[in-house]
Length: 532
Image (cartoon, rainbow, N blue to C red; front, side, top):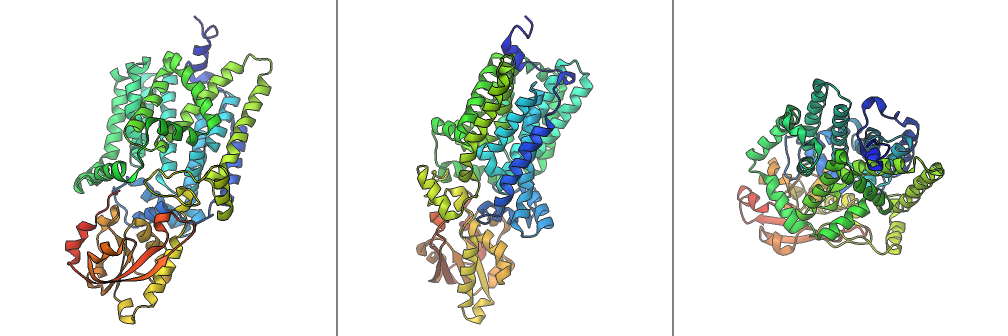
């Protein structure tokens, strides 16, 4: 049966490269420009994000690994700081650039799936407005790059499939497998989520015509190259006793809030946008019905199950959004092609996507002043729950974690200034969390404060500062009096640091003045470990 007689095949069959539609450069550029105009006014709003402080600390200690993440984000942060210094908008520009590239990559995937101008434009708009991806573009973190690299991996897979259908020479296809392996290694050095996608989509290939790939050397070359690129991080893990495994176990059992599969799916829907998720459903159904695209539908579902059952957070699956958006938009474009009123319907759908996406922006982009934002969340039904086992305040965690850091450093400096001069000159600072230690390391030089220490994640591996062994007084940031008294004989409260918009666990944060340590620092240090 010809593809024109079978709509499902027409929607999803691979299109030879020569038959691909031109790239919709003008409308995609419009989407990129509109996205940029939304992000630039907000790029420095509220303050530095809690994880940005940690990545800045990691960037000062470049290595092949860290307790809670691979090394790429530290390299990117080092580069951003080398160019922008401590200017927050400049530090965030790499994430914004990665987010813009992801929008373009979504359009390219729609094109590779056979999509024309409409499908490419709608895919770009969906990627631009997906709430999760909006926030990923706003802060400097591994997530923006994780999504971009995984989108690139999907695009290469689609390109390989299209080349095979077009009858390209095996050598030409093999070069793309090598590209896939190189990008896969870089993606793994960014975040470990590509491994889960690899398992999910690898299993899906077994139930699709693409299982023939496994009889060729291309996929195995890709796996070997990815492993070779990732190997230095594995060696780092071995040298440090596999700390990431301990971190992942503690995060899933202690730190993160347990989600049922239904809660996971609802979180994924919210991350995509409710109207946008309907587009995903359309694309998934059509892809499942077509043999050549079945591995994409099954792989998406398998990866969803892996994350949901394995205790992952819904945002882990967000890297699949550009692909599944593209599947849906291409299906819709093919279905509407023969309708007399197709142009009206397509324009209406783009308007609907934009109209549904814009009201959600204040939830994920700091475009409202904090008091107004607090009122906004109250008006829409309250502040969303934290993905972690933590109480939330007037702002959701992803906003609240941008407040209180500089205030803490100012308060620490004030406590330091009230000490006798001899103790000021023999001072050590310890943060219970990397939030406090990172704030001291970032803002502290402006207040002539010494570098901070912590037992939280990779701070533990960095060990005590050289002068900590001779310190006469410690300022301990956070923790209970009982916990501090277990390590010091003389403890007094120096101050409480507060910001009304910070997470409740960081409000009224105690700054303890601690003297007379009960044990030698080297004996005490390992007991301070907090991997979560």
